[in-house]
Length: 193
Image 1 (tube, rainbow, N blue to C red):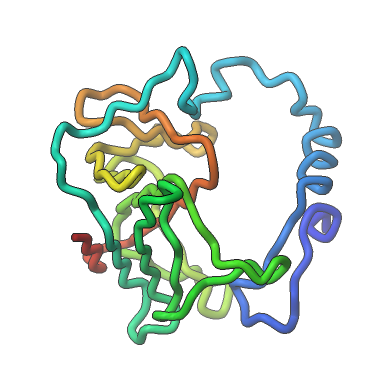
Image 2 (cartoon, one colour):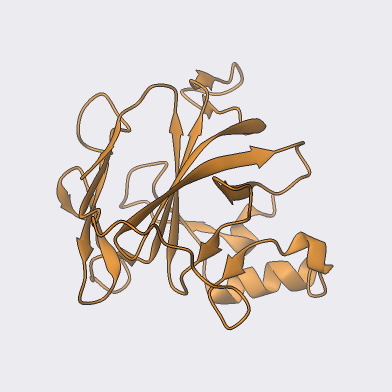
């Protein structure tokens, strides 16, 4: 298949968390699939700039800690701790610093999008392959600059891009930097303080 052209697996890391790509391989995919000149309606993410401003809640309260319960045990549960000095969150997995395997540095993110979807199922065709319903709409939480922005996500059909909207129905604006999207199925716990 085409997979090995654009991705690789690190067999020293357990599946499914061992699939990687690079900027060069993404650029190759963009070229090979003729995606260089996407129409503007296909580029829906908005980042903070002179035209797009972040709209943070008026509250002085900061969200310093976020916890996402992904698994029955703790191994794959994610947590984040806000660092006001860099206006970003440090990521932990299973209670341990989640480090970039290439640099050895702890992963830090500027935007965390929590997208709640219905309870997961499993594909009949594959051993333990999780099936998530990513169509429709649901709750969305965005954490950036130590603040929480509540809203919704929606995806009308399989060919549509997921849209993340604030409570007024406007597309969210992301802070420049790393963005981590957590797809959280069913009633799994997401807590923050």
